[in-house]
Amino acid sequence: MADSISIREAIEDYLDNILLSRAELTFRSYRNGLNLFKDILERNGINPEGDPIENITEDAIAWFATSLKKYSPATERLYLSSAVGFFEFIAAERIAEPNLPRIRLLVRQRARRVGQRLPQFPRESIEQIVNYITSSFTSHSSQRNEFLRTLRNKAFIITLADSGLRVHEACSLRRGDVDWNEGKAIVLGKGDQQSVVRFSSRAVRALKDYLRARSELDGHSGRPLPSLPLFARHDRGAGKKIKLITTTTGRNIVRDVVKMVLGEDAVGTITPHSFRHYFVTTVLRGSGGNLKLAQELARHKNIQVTQRYAHLSDDELDQRYYEIFEK
Image (cartoon, rainbow, N blue to C red; front, side, top):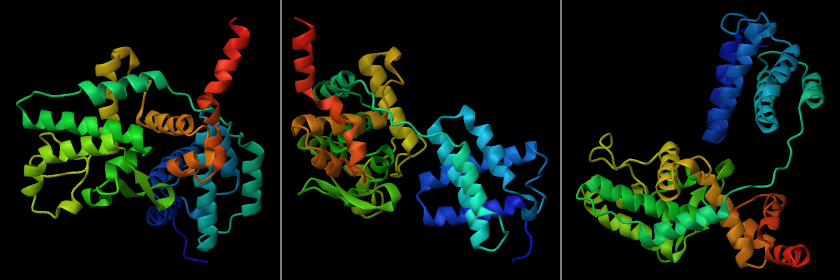
């Protein structure tokens, strides 16, 4: 058994391990869950800052599970996974000797099942945005940053709609990731898995228009072009440097475009992930419901995830329904 350390120190060691071995999004989620776990310990008379790791018992997982009922089942499961992983870590590292079978039993007894919700999104509104962006979205501003933001935002929206990229994947792309001749890019997706995404011709045109307008900035960056971000910041904070946009900026781009095209009331009804839903259903509609094709293009590990979209693309069922009930 290792020398005794505090509960906080053990949690920090575990999170350091997660940071090295898992995706950044997973790390942030686990950190949030364990911050809440520490709060629950304090409410039950255990001080994570000073109490040794031996003071924590399996009862803590029961307290934690009870406290999570105000969250969604999916969040509850995620946060419980972070706590169970912590117990498994301290056992594997011989920091403490928790009763892992009892911990897993408590989780099974108390955790709710995550329901399978059908993906919902305003497809017609997204099509309105994409059509507007493609045909009417221009800037005549003499301000370089505003002009570049307009071209960037246009390319970003079309890329989301036509590639199925997740927002963090799009924001992380570098120029060198894109094969312009093939219209493809290598991305690092969920679980740090490399995969190929494809770009439509209109997405490639929008990206090239944006990068052409950005060429002077890129040329004076002092960095190799392939290393530069595909989507860059254009604000005072960036100055003359070419910096990656963050996922927050990606969400703000979608919010601003939604507000401009659909109005203030529509803000929040469409997110970057809505464009991924749109992409999957567009593939299904265009392929006659080819689930395997949609799964591969969307990079779903499990075809059951893709199956959830099938009902949204079945135009024939819609037609037959209205033929029966709307005579």
